[in-house]
Length: 223
Image (cartoon, rainbow, N blue to C red; front, side):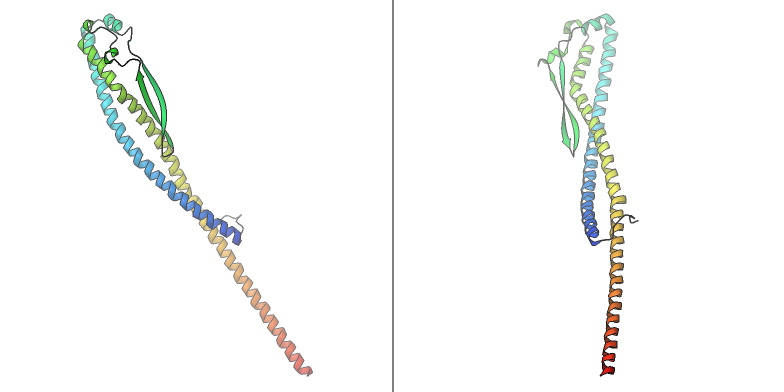
């Protein structure tokens, strides 16, 4: 429905036509963005599912090894084994931009490069099951961080998709139809005004012709 505050002038008609062309271009770009976001989001969802299965399987295996270790070691021995860690992990969080969405990127560094420093105890005094549990958790760390990255990326991408979808719908169902209706309204008014003007001109012309005819008749009668 055309807005009641639209001024039916040729200048306004030109402005609205430019606005409509720009809005349609914006609508197409946003639809393309939405579709590409959806494509990348689905890739992330698939990656997330695969990583989650891998991490959950790894954690389950590590827990089983811990249970086995505790069955052969006393609680005190287990506590003493983890009392003095030899390795430290530092985490750096950055971002990368995907389709105007800042996705988190995690990088970690260990204090030392020695692979055996994951064990905070002497291997001779502990169960091999405990060693396996510690090793499996250490091996899982990169996948756990990647899973955290991907899950957060999925949340952010989903929010951006929803925001883009709302903007596309607003343009498609509100702004573009309103602008088209206003253009139609102005065009109709201008056509109506033009017809009225033509009718007035024709009436003026007829009046002038009639006056000219009367003048000629009058001139003839005096002649």
